[in-house]
Image (spheres, one colour):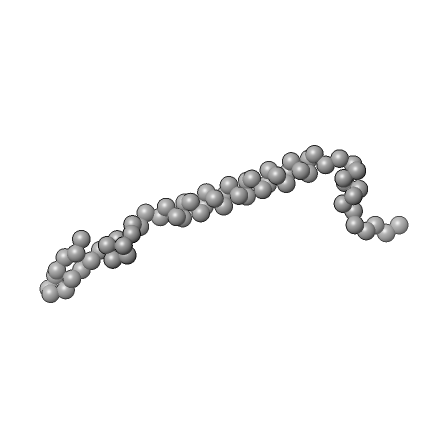
Length: 65
């Protein structure tokens, strides 16, 4: 709310910015980051666990004999 004190108009932060200051965006970003890390880790780990011997040999680029 705006108030007038000593000839000056005082407006609170929420009214001046035109929005609320709840910090929701911070939580959405944090949860999204953790979800992305978890999903990519699951994909990477399951791919590594299901790799058989022929795929393992195919990933060797150069071996010196």
